[in-house]
Image (tube, rainbow, N blue to C red; front, side, top):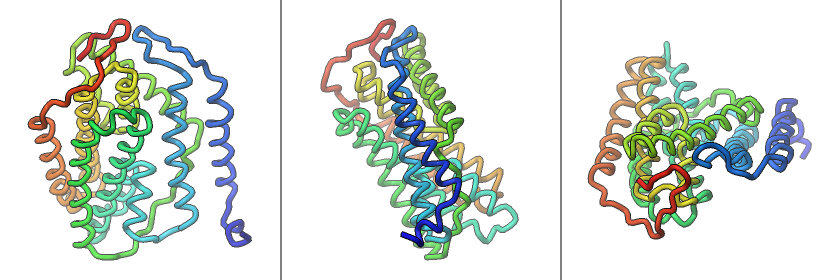
Length: 303
């Protein structure tokens, strides 16, 4: 206990207090009523999703503080995926810049982080819409399997080199929570409006744009609408997969620009295989029959 307490810093105590503020102080006082033209903006539900994502990231932060630097590729990639695979990609790409010999190791950690981020998406989807995960989890599970195979292949090629994790930031900052709350408030409204105005194509466009930087908002919004019978199962998994593919494209481009051609080419090959499988799933996977009839909300027509 003394050894553990010696490792506790002021920032760790601050992170705990901020998470308590987010989860136990703000959440209970928010209104549990639906607002907006499509009745999809519920303050308490929005903040509950914030608590869920921040909680996952906070657990990763505690693991990072517990294990410290250099725990190996697997832990480095896993923690990066739980916190933010996009942030992990940018962090390791910066390390490769000027040191191209580190590119294979960085590519391994980035692939592992991307794989774990999809695991996180499935866990969140199962938590928010447990009745739908058995249906939407099959095609997404195939995509996850492909990412796992690619990650393990890359890890075996590189070997067991030590990994020095970039410094972990406090995931429970109120500013970060407010930004995510704004994203989660806007994305479901954009999905509902796009469905009403442009049909399914509009939903995919919103998923593609929002998935470039953050998959959590579109995942939570989509699965929440499925649980409320506002979105078909067959559309839901495709929306999540489109966001995931858009996120892979963004990370590949970011790694190429920030980390250089050596890292960029390696990730373009790995992510290219994943993108090909994802596009094949979108095109050839048979339609999924929704077990329960859709019950459209005000202004929403079933997809």
